Image 1 (spheres, rainbow, N blue to C red):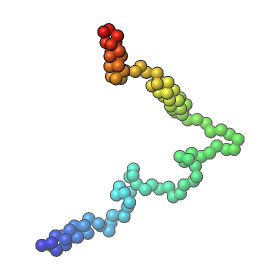
Image 2: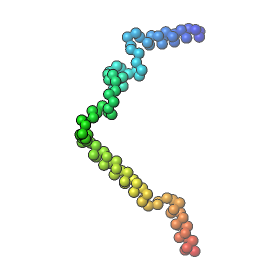
Image 3: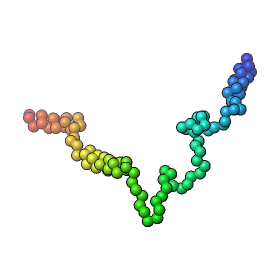
Image 4: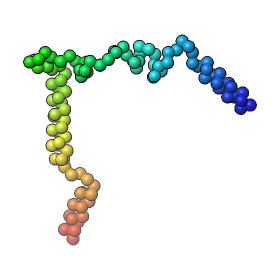
Length: 105
């Protein structure tokens, strides 16, 4: 019985592999979103952006200034705002309440 099951499993696995299907790494369709792509080699530039000619500066995209400004403001607000927040821990309240009740005795 075990040999029949193993034989059936082998046949099922062999049927799943067809000669028409290419041997791909991911299993996604060729040319799909997760496909391997068509670019043959890297060109040595970051994000595929061509460098400006010598002596010229790179021009910022329209989204870059707000992106950097938002990041800097976030760091400033969190860096100043979080340490300056009031102490609202339960332990602090309990300590102050205990001191107030001791003073009232």
